[in-house]
Structures are given as C-alpha cells and as structure tokens.
Image (cartoon, rainbow, N blue to C red):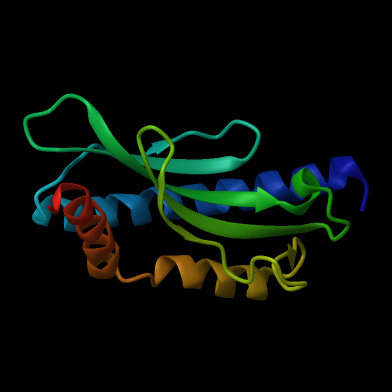
Length: 150
C-alpha cells in the first residue's frame, strides 16, 4: 500500500472512530464528575494523528489537573512496516506525569492492526471502549491520595 492509500484509509478510520472517541471520553467525564472532578467536554485534538482529549479540573479551579486522551496511532509514525493502526488511552497529569496508559498489545508483534481488517479494528476499539470508568476514576484517586498522604 502506498503512502497516499494508507493515509486515505487512516482518514476514513479517523472519521469513523473520532465521534466514538469523543463520546467515550464524555462518558468517562460523567463518571469523573460523580467522583468530584470537573471535566470539560471532550474535544478533537487531531494533528499528526487522530486524537480526542478530555481536560479535567478540580471543582472551583480554572487550572486543569489532568487530561485523558484516546488516540488512533499509525504504524508508519513509529517506523514499523505493517500498514496498521492501534488505539491507546492515556491519563497524563499537567506537567507530564503519566497516571495511566493503555496500549493493547504494545511491544508485541500484534500491536498494529492492518488498516483493511475492519473486524479486528472494531475488536481493538472495544478494548478501549469497554474500560471500566470507575476503575479509571479509582486509579486517579489513588494517584492523588498518594501525593497528599503523610
């Protein structure tokens, strides 16, 4: 597959999955709101790769505390030969500290899904889509509890 064909296929996948990525982050934002955080609406942060972000604040504070992102990553960006994509979910504190990161099959030969394999791409999306929002909230709470613990 040449570069133009690959880019066109990635754009097709990005157009399909971006609304799902945004909806997924808004769903997580609702749960984080119930845990005392103040999430803002998810937004499209696509630049070199398709990426949706959720910025989260503490109540009554205009300064953001952390971001949650979902990305559709391209194998060619990482110099890999397979014409593939992968989804990732990241939770990063402002300042760059990684609170959590899910990259299914990362550091294995299976990390990339061929852009023509729509069934496997849908299955990989489901790994992100089916993450437990309450576990994500608990992870974040444990992170911040450890920062203020004596």
